[in-house]
Length: 172
Image (cartoon, rainbow, N blue to C red; front, side, top):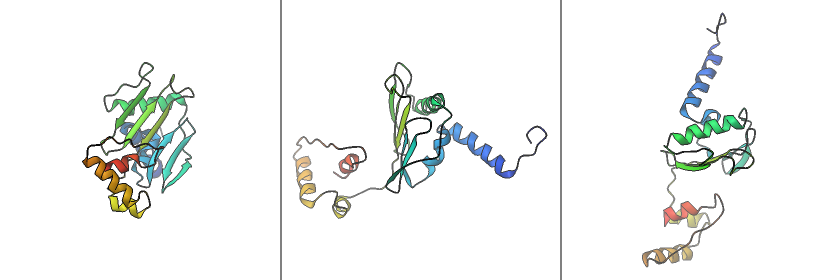
């Protein structure tokens, strides 16, 4: 009951969910973390929240109240890993217990306001055969890299965000 009004079951559940999500640390982003289809969450401003789901990048309808709201959420979230994120240390990264990776950047480094990205760990363990089957790599290249590793040669793996660097390293 709120004052003299009785809350509907739906509104009551909505309030409980909001409190839970805020306490869990990710506020409006928490449902995205729980959605298995979402593999990446990118916050580029209060109303610029993007996700990658089912292999496609799209902007969500979600929004933070303002930049201070984003800062509060990401500072609280990063602090759960005993990492500092503040004006003096405006960049922080962490690995979430499920294997996902998060990085947050605050002003003055982030000149347009706080930004935050979570690359979710999918739990899929790929094999060399799976990489070959999806034309990620050729058999010859995979064999070459495997030989180079066994011979303890230095190898540099580079590529853009989401290009598969970590996946390749895990397979190797």
